[in-house]
Length: 163
Figure 1 (cartoon, rainbow, N blue to C red):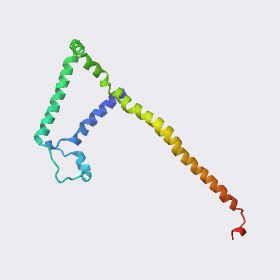
Figure 2 (cartoon, rainbow, N blue to C red):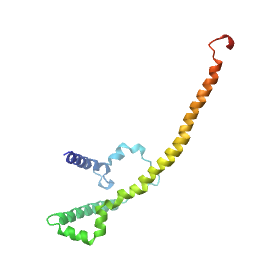
Figure 3 (cartoon, one colour):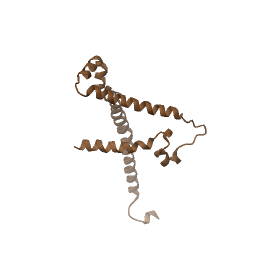
Figure 4 (cartoon, one colour):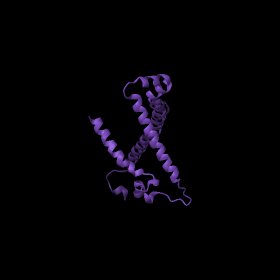
């Protein structure tokens, strides 16, 4: 069960790793990254600081939304799945989109991966690499071979003609 072990490791690491980004409003722990990278952060003369009230409100809102989602999912999927089936039928378009991961992978494949592969294969490799890079490397070899042939004609092994 490698999957369970990996998930448990990630869960434990996320509990401790989350303390690296503790919001400034809590003050019981300094921001871990700021301690290590203090010299790398730029000091701006007019640096604006966010409101502590806004920070606390956003923390509370995110926890409330997470708990709401957890309770709602538990209510929908514990026991009878009839409520989940009714919801998926009434919101069929959203259900299908979420079931298919909002087609993020397919959109990424179509907009980023395929054009990138075509660009790198046809333009960068076949046009640039074969015509520019390979010809310049082969050309330097031809020049070296030709120069070596010319210099080889002057080299006879006898020192007298060179004096």
